[in-house]
Amino acid sequence: MTKTGKEDPVWQRAVEWTMREHDGTLDEAGRADLLQWLAASPLHGQAYQEAARLWLITGLLPPSEDLDSASASCRSEV
Image (cartoon, rainbow, N blue to C red):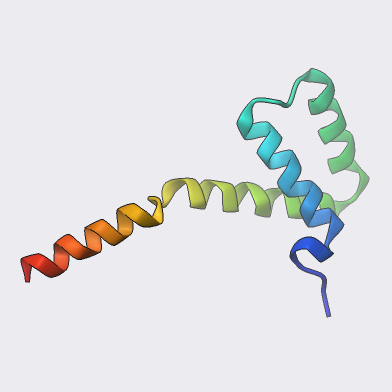
C-alpha cells in the first residue's frame, strides 16, 4: 500500500514547493533549495511534476460557485 496525502512526506513537500512557487514566496535561496531537493531523488521530481499539474488543472477550473450558477442557468433555459 502506498502513502497518499498527509501520510506521504514527499507529496506534502512537493505541494509546499508548488505553492511557494506560485504565491511568489520562492526567492533565489528557496529556488536553490528546491533544485537541491529535486536532485536528491527521482521521486521528488515525479511528485513535484504531479503537484504542478494539479495546480494548473485546479487553476483552470472555475470555482464551484460558478459551476453551480452555470448549471442553474442551463436548467432554467430548458
